[in-house]
Length: 289
Ligand code: NAD
Image (cartoon, rainbow, N blue to C red):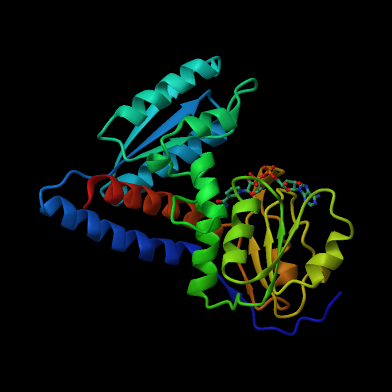
């Protein structure tokens, strides 16, 4: 077990999120004072997964708090892919909607990639359409996935050096691992993207200057996986014995890492904040505001 030797900064993702949301609320207030409508986010919920319902509730509340409109379209868990695509098509055509988010996971038998591809890229605030994924790949401006944007915002606000750093990402999903790897690469980090088949993951992690854990495996990142002085970003959220836990052994890593995000008040609030920012950006581009 490594000897604790670092003063570890614990990221306050909530404070950072509140700061950014305040700026957005002020901007929306200015737009409305100038006679413009508020930006609007439409969320589509298919089925009655309690976790999804709770995420959507949080997103809608966050919209309301900054003066953004939100609409919810609920479909039963039995909805077919064609029915979901119909809702997406009507939201694409609705001029009063700036952002569209289809809450994942979708029921079995529904192709999430096909649904993502149906969302108008100009309204794709989750950044999951092939167009936006391609723009990210090409280093062109676009709407990118929210959690990766939130992670980059945290790293920047806490002045974590990225140029030439070794960034190790655990997890290769479309929503976190792949896009955050692209964003880190864009900032000239040397990126290693790990997954469930990676050999000797602990050794790879030990060579990281920046470690992003997004596997959804409770407390997998043990203290001896972390190089003293590394910055550790915990994205994972799992339920263990009724309690939400992250992918990082937070208490164990404290004193070894230079910076760590807690699993509450860490990445989560920043993900929602980036959803709001993407919606505001989409609104600005669509309306010329
Ligand atoms: P996912 O299930 O789509 O992908 C998980 C990835 O982790 C896969 O690429 C898999 O190869 C890898 N993986 C799984 N087990 C592994 C292991 N033992 N070793 C190495 N790699 C392993 O998940 P996701 O949607 O990317 O989400 C990842 C985690 O982040 C989940 O816990 C999710 O709840 C959480 N999450 C949190 C936020 C947030 O805002 N805090 C946002 C999105 C996802």
